[in-house]
Image 1 (tube, rainbow, N blue to C red):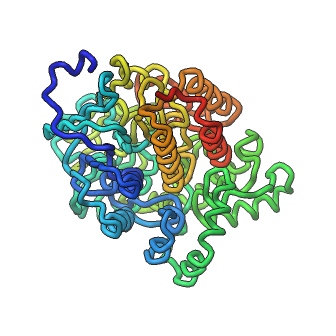
Image 2: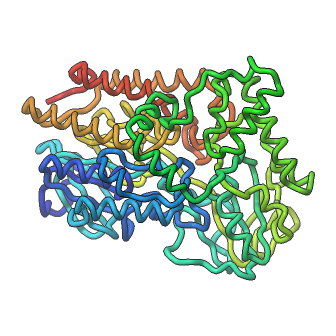
Image 3: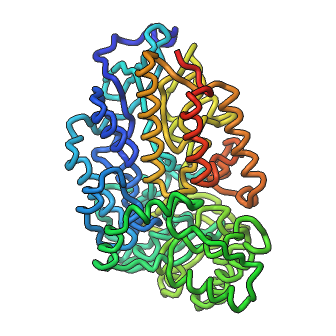
Amino acid sequence: MSSADEALSPVVSHVDAIVVGAGFMGVYTLYRFLKQGKSVRLFEKGSGVGGTWFWNSYPGARCDVESMEYSYQFDDALQQEWEWTERYASQPEIRRYIEHVVDRFDLAGNMQFDTAVTSVIFDDETGHWIIETDNGDRVSATYCVLATGCLSQPIMPNIEGLESFSGRMEHTGLWPDEDIDFTGLRVGIIGTGSSGAQCLPEISKTAAQVKVFQRTPAYCVPSQNRPLDPDVQAYMKQNYKKIRDKAWTTRAGIRYGLTDRMALEMPPEERERYFEASWQRGGIGFTATFFDLFDSLEANETACVFVRKKIHEIVDDPVTAEKLCPHDVIGCRRLVVVNDYYESFNRPNVELIDVSEKPIERIAPGGVVVGDETHELDIIVLATGFDAITGALTRIDIRGRNGVVLKERMLSDPKALMGMMFSDFPNLFTANGPGAVAALSNMVPMIEFSVDWMMDCIAYLERDGKKTIEPKHDAEDAWAKHVDDMATASLYVSCSSYYLGDNVPGKPRKFLLFQGVPEYVEMCTALANEGYKAFNVE
């Protein structure tokens, strides 16, 4: 046992596996372990299942991938029986879906809620992981899976006086499990990414006044959300396999993203018609209208011009419209999919406060101070995003062989083989870590792929009578270099975004995501088919 463990109390129990987190990944991982006959415990800091969809319950919270695809595919009966009500599922519906999965497969008995994991420490003597929680649990496990999510660690803004505000303040990523009545209130929304953009249309329906504090305008496209047509749902269910198979061939793992049309090879009038058709169809597939939008700045700019024109057509006040227009690359940060965002600025109770040149100076007891003006508010909504990809991994004390500290790695040079495993951390798995496709893909199918890969890896280990597996350093480095090389050749590095860690002060600027679902799947599969040569197996 490492010296760091000597002062700790005795281990209470041992299980084959520990799972940390009860979102889509945690639930499926638990299911797979139980199917393999493993003893397993799942710890979740929240009071229910859902992960991201438990905590992000703010008004208007909704997925930006169509519900029929943002769902599990491991069980066809599950696919056939669940009835989605909307094209893009809302947060409450997604939670109901995950709860249904837990009930259907009788998983709740292995889950422990209201329990945060505080440390995950490898015992060099036994080759087991020692997991400790804030409730005093100390459990030993052969395998540990961190299903902690890539957008699960909210960022509180570094604004002077944040604690001095006398009204109510809520972060979208830590929204209380209650309905907040905004009727007659003066509301400030700080942040205009997906959370802020989704909040505005809902809050502005009843609030007396809403002030939106915008530092960087985002490209927003309409979702064109609507009740899901029963005939469309029936067609999808009849053709699920074909639809899913097609999705695996696209860059983002979503069926829309397969086209060979090139923006720069098309006459302007025809190109405009394709953009308009994508806008009317709605959704994140707008950036897949043409194949070359992510390969050429000139091609990308044709999409940017189209969206800016739309903003000016929608927003009545030309000054506000111009302030809402982004002037960087579309898609270099997450595209925002939301209905009625730009339209909300035509409401008499909504005002845009541009803080790009004159930033928020401080929070005062009565509101937000910008320059010489105090914007009086009753409630502040912090839509200030997340410490993405690595954030959740640095909030737990995770130590591997010889006391190697994972947090130190994540804060200096974050990397993981496949975004799933770390050198010097045997039998420790995650998904959507640095070097995974994560937020550049349809998350649920990619989670299933990653968990299936892990389970095959564990089965291989046990068939050969081995106890531990971990990546070799050179394999981990090679994977990270490949991710870096792809990023350097792309448009993603052209702007500031959470993809690069730019939204977290002091975080190393490094592109953290693998680009392209097909290549990712191929490379991960090859690592296994080659007999796990990239790993140290003992």
